[in-house]
Length: 75
View 1: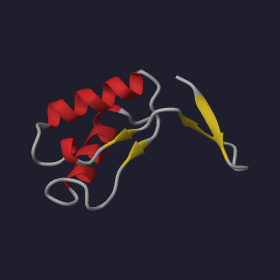
View 2: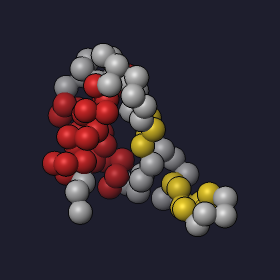
View 3: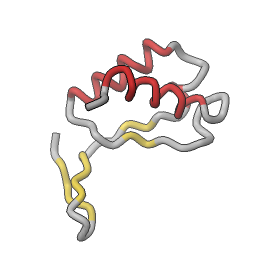
């Protein structure tokens, strides 16, 4: 994965980010979202686009990603 510096902050962001809108809420299974996030992370994606209205229903993508962080990506 290629990473680029963002402004003068020194933050490095991957060339590709993963958006967690429609496929990470209550519509698809937790395991499908989990597998997608884990695969992306293993390929070097470290930026995940997330907002409080992502779902459906609104907010469910945040809950799903939070669970994945807790279960799989914690330090």
